[in-house]
Length: 351
Image (cartoon, rainbow, N blue to C red; front, side, top):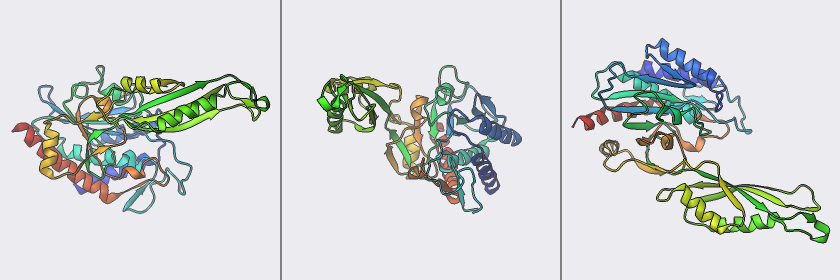
């Protein structure tokens, strides 16, 4: 087991050296594919996604998928070290994507290799997906969609690997991004002519600030072309993290009723998620005493449409920030917990 973990961490270090921003994962996907193929895992590649099935895979069995993503965000401007250098400290792996989501990639690969040759009561499938950070259509949405590969599109359960400190998210907020456009009439500022679109937008933003039915934040605003021209258009962006109970369409309709500005959704499909009631995933978490929580961040969960939990090594607070890192010990503990969880999960399925 120590050797398997060490090999996965070495792969993670090599992954960090290859830029892999969303939609640009071709090189890192090739690196991972060649490595897994060299380890005898018979990977299949679908675009920049990689899928491995256990050696005893059978379409007659139910399937548990381990999913982690291989893409990253753009490196933050505040990095004080090379974001593509994992460093020399064996206890710490630095670099862009080390924590989000390299730790889960390394730990899930190790756990999958541990079970790969075993005759299991259900199938175990590993998916290493692309385009997660930008909600791309050719990542998990494609793999778990109706045109995805067998064993993934028809999977029964999924463990989503994300940095949660190996606590388990059993609920996850959705994501609804709205573009607001306030329209007025331009005029000369000295004569106070026209209708100021910026003021319209500010009135609407104040209404949104007081809205308390969903977690909502206005994150961007833009208006004006010159200091002496009344702006006839003002745009702003609203970030909403729905907790569930209402559809994104219902939320949009209600907010539009509050605002004079025209609101439009970038995507209405990023819905909130929750582990199914009575799920064997929940039973296994309870048996192991794993702490559960509701996650404020989104992941591939909403793209799978499956009974799932979100759990992985590392800490969410390190994601998308400068000088990202993960501890080797966190990956090692993640491997142990994944293996323990999968073993107990199989037992719950057989019972």
